[in-house]
Length: 399
Ligand code: F2R
Ligand code: MG
Ligand code: MG
Ligand code: MG
Image (cartoon, rainbow, N blue to C red; front, side, top):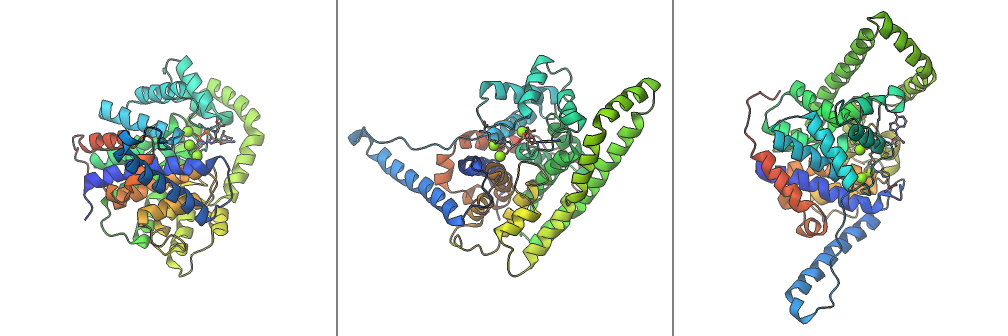
């Protein structure tokens, strides 16, 4: 059986290697990548590592040796590190502290490949001295908030924290929702972060993976989450109409937003919800012949939106339990990352989310040493995982 500490290490390191290796392909935004191409990249990382290790042995004899290439992490890992550091230092959620860490990290290294709009958020947070940590995000996109996957891509440390504190679904939501809403207030972004955190949390406590049961659990929880988020929206709308001033202000905003709101509704009507996509995944996993990449991209999605990327990450983890042509000699963790990247689109983010789930199940022993040595940020991820694991346990039964 894989130890819990190995799973904590595996999850955070799995996320880092998914980000670093996936980032090699992200900028191309390809609609599916031939698995042999991804495999060649991985083999290059492994070969570089072997030759660099033999060079270390002969260091004194060969001073001209090439330094080994280090694969840089991107915004996905930069933000996950802030989530981990804040939860550890505060032994809980302090939204102002986390907002400050996100923003300071961005201004220190703005070149990490952040999303187009999130940068405006960091600027506004800094200018307001973090006094209204949810304000800037809630005003983005005409008040709809960002539906990007930036909330889900960074949430793995919160899933580990929730596991350590034995949180139930409600407590998990009270943790994940505000962490997400510091930058992403759109319901799809919040629900996506919930799905990713539920998947990591479940992987941590699963000893013998049954894909159908894994989907069952996620589907049940996501139906509850989807209802909760919808109900909250209805209540917020009703509350907004209380005072005459609020009524007038709301009418003005509504006039501005009428067209956009209709577009938004149309878009939501045309998309499958998370629980509907999970049902699709269930069907795929059960069938003998797995669907081709084209169908996965069309049905689950592989773009920068949360709704069109978190389900693909869950699928990649479960798909790796099956035969995948061309990479059958790889262990299931490696298969998860290689397959996730082969889906194309937002490769670093889908691979980071899939890596966090796979690492939480298979443990650190399954993450190749050569990948760990080639990816920037692995040593820090190991430390964050140890510190999260060492936090005091609180007793709130997991449901
Ligand atoms: N952005 C990238 N990669 C692009 C490469 C960057 C390049 N190196 C460069 O410097 O130019 N990757 C990262 O972004 C994704 C996560 O994005 P996040 O944090 O969700 O960002 P944001 O800005 O909130 O949303 C992304 C875009 O989605 C559209 N969008 C979001 N909500 C919308 C809404 N309600 N209505 C309309 N559009 C909406 C916007 O175009 C946003 O800019 C990850 O892939 C990460 O790796
Ligand atoms: Mg990125
Ligand atoms: Mg982001
Ligand atoms: Mg990305």
